[in-house]
Image (cartoon, rainbow, N blue to C red; front, top):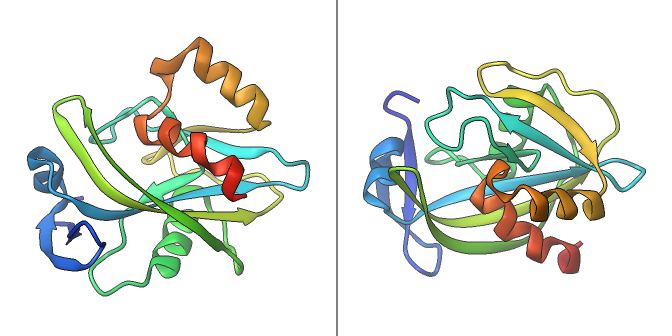
Length: 170
């Protein structure tokens, strides 16, 4: 993460500059992000438990993959890169289904993102990168929503926000 930059954006998702990733989160600067939801043939969602060492939301359950595109990188290329880096998943086909704007306090940081949402179909067992992910599991959306209702603090803030909208997009 050292010196990694995020793309700062205005309310219309137009690039207005770059900022070091941690600094953008410390100052709550709006930036571009993406979240990926990978489903299998049984309609289950692949979720991941973030590594405890992550700079925020470590040890929490989240969607399949989420991150930030690098300066000059297309969103779909960033999605494919991070799926491979975190989970060893190579996908040819991904579909953008919408975007979500949210701003939320996460520990001593502020998430202020325009988050582009992607879905994909894949069957298999991920090969997790232990620096990024400690655990994965396939889960039906109905069961996931019950688990979130029962234990909301075990799940990342953006994941809960996006899940409320994903059913109608999918």
